[in-house]
Length: 73
Image 1 (cartoon, helix red, strand yellow):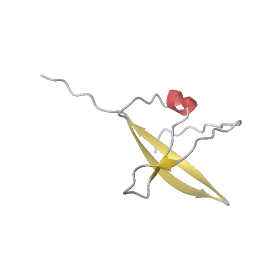
Image 2: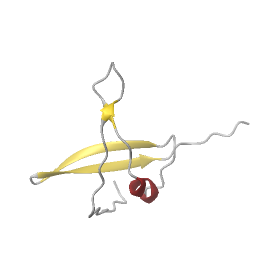
Image 3: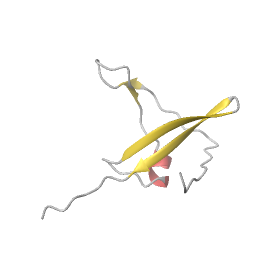
Image 4: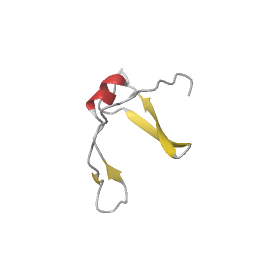
């Protein structure tokens, strides 16, 4: 986790959770535009989510991974 940045979202961002599918307990939500822009995310990129305790609160650590585009040679 070498290059960490703290993003303070003072106004907050609210998203709604929906079921991922009928056979799963997973939920999905929308990644807010501000986060998409800050992390330079694009369709097909991956995000690793880690939950870390921070006193009585939790921090969510988000590690984006850019999609690798392979040449068709």
